[in-house]
Image (cartoon, rainbow, N blue to C red; front, side, top):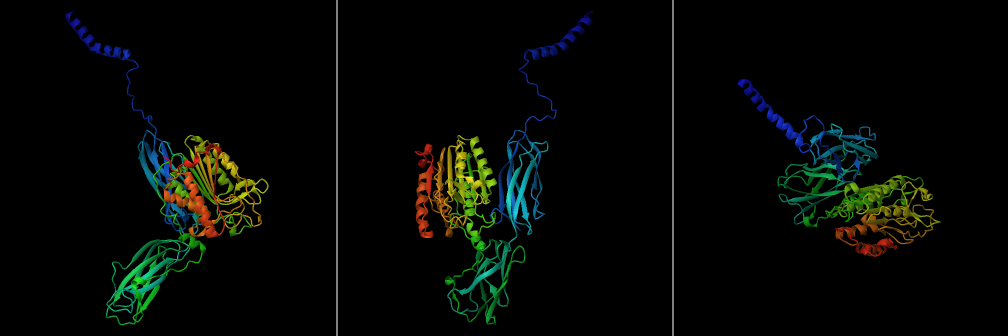
Length: 570
């Protein structure tokens, strides 16, 4: 009996802890969190985005030129909480290019942990059979389980192959003191190498070679790597050599061998200098290049002072939206128009204003929209997009609208219109009424709206009207601006908005950019308005012998405050 009792006691002791645990678990129900078993379910989600997309090309004209090596770069960021697994980038073209544009179609990024990013560079090579048109890239970021990013689309203009032609444009022999060549003394050959072709030349090498013995090169290298030569661009080379007293000829011949990446668009030159020739002193050497005949080449090789040294202000305006439009080539889209109907330098105006919007005005790349030679459909679409974006963040939103191109008034109503490149002056039904643009922007409730118009609305245009038959200019009706809006216009009343040929810009745009360059955007609207008005009014009379007086229109709601607005307020 005693044994049976002891056995019962042991069993009770063994059971007691388990019963206590159950009781404890019941009493703390709702407080204890049990760790779930690893079942393979997803607990934290990744979220992939594509950002900071850029197109990079060799000559920096933002066009895929035939034969050019380019690249598309962007960052893939995981802004989610979970790891993105086995991430791949897939690149494709929406447009058919017949293999003239090649690129890496698939890139493997591997796993991308939460809150990390990966920079991606997609090399793009345009073959020489690339034609004029557009390459429409679609970039997809694919995650193994389906957590893909929204696709990125990039539409980039393509241009047919333009041949370079690299030559020695001019050359001068000289000595330190001038006079005849002395054997065993240094002789300097200064050459001007120039690309006189329509296309850019890359990997340009210049190699002077002696055609006779007993001539020695005195410099550090006997080959000059010029790299990229744009159309019309020149480079100076100083080649120092001597002929020893063993030289027996009467002239010293030097062959200048030039090569470039294609191997067929450079011309060798044989230069000779006579021992009896009376040379100039080295410090008197002045040489000039071969004049470049085609207008396109001359323009491509020239840049204005506002096109270079654009300040970078390192400000960030996440809710500042900009739409920049430059309409220049109306002849291309409308039969019966001649080249005089085009708006000279409008594309360059827009391109450089875009750079200032990015670098000086703090507009983020994703909020910057840029059109050249835009059709009615393209313009309406982007104006509507800007308005919708601004309306989403109206309390903080700012809108910048820049337009260079033709403007015209309706002959009967005097209402001004901005003219897409595919709209005829004889039928304004498809043109864009300026009042409608103002209305759309003001209805967003944006805190600030700045409009810059390098266009006239008298039918005058830059040097010539859009329609030659419109010989009588019409004074446009002054449009009432609404909301928090300030409008800078290039001219007044019946005046024309004129070009500044020396600077390759519209007169108004040049001085607008010049003041932004000088002040780095640290300026009030009143200071900007007064400076641009004064400079344009004076310089237009000097350069174009015509009056052009910019104007500023403001809405009633900001009439007392706009002058103190700063371009780059903190």
